[in-house]
Amino acid sequence: MFEVETEETTPVRAFLVYQPGTNTLELRGLIHALDMETAGMMILPDRLPEGNTARYGTGTGKAQEIAETAVAQEADCIIFDYEISPTRQRNWEKLTGIPVFDRQEVILRIFARRAQTKEAVLQVELARLTYSLPRLAHSYGDMARQRGGSYGSKGAGETKLELDRRTIQTRIDRIKQDLAKVVRERKTQRKRREKIPLPSCALVGYTNAGKSSLLNALTGSNVYAENQLFATLDPTTRRLALTGGSGLLLTDTVGFISNLPHNLVDAFKSTLEEAVRADVLLIVVDASDPEATGQYKTVCNVLEEIGADTNPRITVLNKIDSLKDPDIQTATLGQMFPGACQVSAVTRQGLDNLTRQLCDILAGPEQRYRLPVTHSDLLTQLRKTGTVADEIWQDDTVEFTGRTGRSSPLAALLEPFRISF
Image 1 (spheres, rainbow, N blue to C red):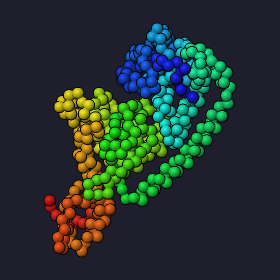
Image 2 (image 1 turned 90 degrees about the vertical axis):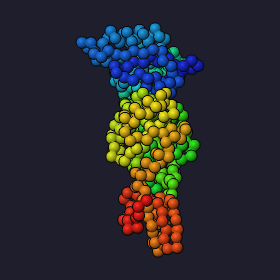
Image 3 (image 1 turned 90 degrees about the horizontal axis):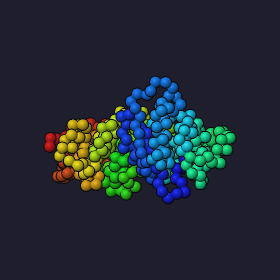
Image 4 (image 1 turned 180 degrees about the horizontal axis):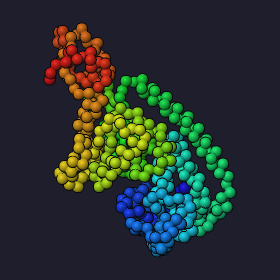
């Protein structure tokens, strides 16, 4: 419903409008993901003028300035880096004569492009229809222009405003039913995984932080990973082998972003459940991004919103190979993120340390044991549920290093046989 491409081959030029104190680079990255280019930009003043600002959300003088500047820059559309109401959206389009969008709609369009699986497609369609209901006039005008009309012209789609809203609502209800079936299937798959006594770990983080690349580097898999926003919408689970043990299940999840539309958070609830249910979270941060601290806070806020804020976690500073001044920046990052694990999914630097930290959280610290051969059944159990290394078999004893797990009953059973390293 919201596609913005025209029949022309030239990229759509967008004029960007920001609130004061906003990171201007992020919206540029978002529109770049839609193959748009920036025609120009303007940052609104810190203080709104006195008088009525309800029509545009700013003074009429500033609104006129934005409209004239966008036209002068030959912009095809105007995009606001914050949410605007349907009424103000229509007012802006009447004033400028070109399509007007907000940040939410841009993100929805990107999700629509990235969705591949049945669940992701349904989730995105649900979010888009929910978003579009109060914006029918804008949406159908936009559709008419796509069918050959130029930007700013009135199209035949205007006559479709009589479309019964119940038709859209019926579609929303049907999608919710279809999603419920998919969610039940996901729960069935999760129950199958839970029958295998493996702990779970979820990769979470800001979009384009390198979660998929890190999953590939850790597990040797070939999950789709690109240097683009929201490259992953569907959770992907792979097995990570741990030294001396059976391993863990590592799941890649959808990336977060500041001001993520709530209807998308709601739509992707089942996907985000992977983070809620995980035994440990890897919060992946792009160490090379100047906004790393703010992005980390955004991720923590979303985790709190979905109820995953109490899960054990490891902060992973990824992409340290991209630091311009590694010696200075790594020290600074260590102060900003104390205890974080600094890694590179590209060069594999720091991955061994990350794996050790995972083992410490999931399986507990390494202990040394000397076990009578008559109790070797405990060693067999430990191989299934924990980790075992450095086995030395004697005639009547076996000595080994193992991790029992923090809550495993084996810890108490093996305690009498624990020795110092």
